[in-house]
Length: 115
Image (tube, rainbow, N blue to C red):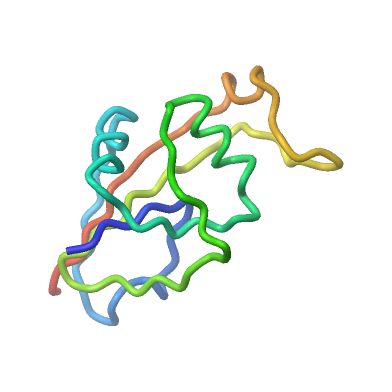
């Protein structure tokens, strides 16, 4: 069983026929899962969002050189952090603390089993 961590989810990540479970997590639960060990599937171009996560929750994850292609198998899990309320970064490379404090962060754990 592997646990991946990313900001998005795509149908191509899942096996052709499977059952997918999803449950919401608190930031503390997500931080605990990350501490147990994850495989980051982050896009390095989202560094500002990764930095915002670190600032807001103290969660640190390695940023891959390039976004990996993830193929989940039975028993694998995907921890997803969704963010809303952060503006598009146009002409700058980071968010202000006020923008981070005003954003909404949601964590969910997706599990894959045989369907």
